[in-house]
Image (cartoon, rainbow, N blue to C red):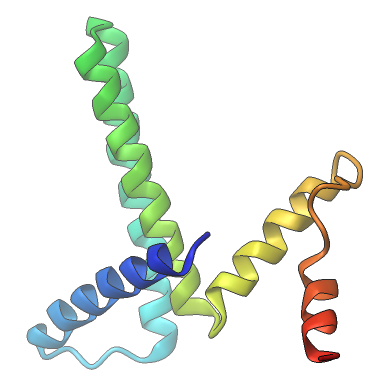
Length: 122
């Protein structure tokens, strides 16, 4: 994913953090991680509700709602990843690479760790 997308994810996380700060509740890092993961579950529940609606009416607008909720779920997941690890982008790219390897090596997708080693050689 590009740096601009991660910047936007970071801004969303910061806004969420600011809202939490406004509550005056002192969350420990472990609590914040748990909150981020439960947020993913909440977004999935909203996706399922949108899916149920789309299945009931089968109209294009209803399916667009499902797509919107899936995007919200993806964003919640990325915010959670950013909360869990300092290098969310690197963790995400490594996981994508690992998932591609499950079906066999993809020669068009070099190992990101190999690129880092090459970059360091300069």
